[in-house]
Image (cartoon, rainbow, N blue to C red; front, top):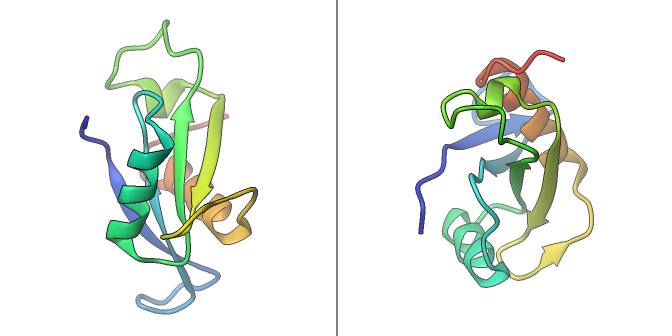
Length: 104
């Protein structure tokens, strides 16, 4: 399995160890559902978000997260994929803007 940057983000708070935590695991390539589920199980949080940069051919691997403006996003609990998760979506956006330097 390829390495991917991972963040744990506490949504809806400015205090550490408060709010609603979500894992954010940035993917360089699509992974099988079974692998995504294993990663979510490892974090054992209510949801894990998996952003994947789209149309990255124009960017180096180092620049993808900061310069690519289009992402797909999937969410998994430790047991199943879910169709949407608000706090994990906000956690992914927060990480893109504040940790990865994305500017749109």
